[in-house]
Length: 255
Image (cartoon, rainbow, N blue to C red; front, top):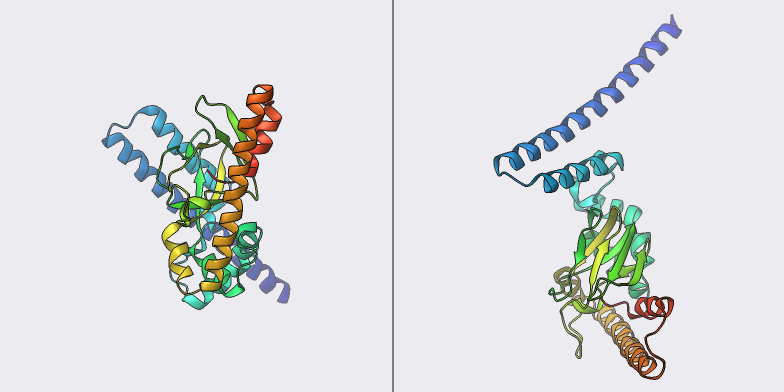
């Protein structure tokens, strides 16, 4: 008799799991159907419709529609629990960003709550040259290319890299406009931190402000030195090789 009860309990648990999965899938399909209806009603071009549907498919297959996305989507959680969850899930990603490694832990614990997760579709521009810099990016997964005026690939950025940090710090001698295009090669998963969020936190953390400004100035000096070296090399020996261009571009770290 005990075996019957155990079997029934297992069956019940399996049924609950399946029911929950079906509920999540139905909710996902509701979002997709709504998007399709919206695009039909507004006569959105077919190629854009297909791109959006592929984004939904990728998001589902990668698990981000099933609870693996941004911790800030868990809106019902109390702030304390959401903080603990964010620290567990995303703090290691933030600590790998060399730009923040010398910042005090308290600053990072607040900054990790500001991270927003986004998925970029293949071929899409993450930033465009000339745009106002309003956020920086951390690559969680994917491959991106930095491209020049003629579409030449200046550098590749991959998982663990970050970009756009200099333009959001309001450093003297810098422009707040992007200096190149950055395009996603395939699907890319990024975390963003906005200029408003970072500068807002720095008001309460003057030590972190000094660390970031000092690091930013060092990177800016390296960027200027690399550009001067590149110009000198081109004058003396013609255009640099592709591999050297890529190496120098990666050292700029400011797009």
